[in-house]
Image (cartoon, rainbow, N blue to C red; front, side, top):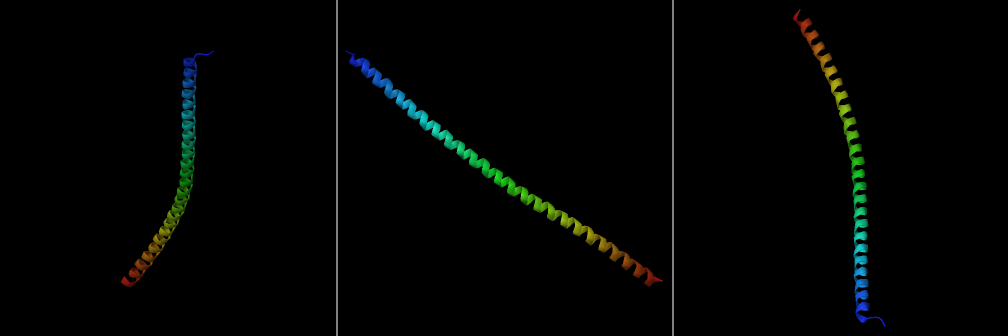
Length: 93
């Protein structure tokens, strides 16, 4: 017959192997869940980047419009100053 101590040792090794397997499964699940978390964070960062790029484009377009308006106002002021100077010169004669 088989020695009872050998059976007990084999049962002990089997229990340790099952514990190690269970721990490995838990670590694998945690790493997969962590990977999903990273993927979700990357997706959120991509969405934020797209939103910020859109806001930047809108701000750049607004800045160009303001620059155009500023040039037009400066042109009109120059015309008005020229007209006023011409009227003053004519009045002084």
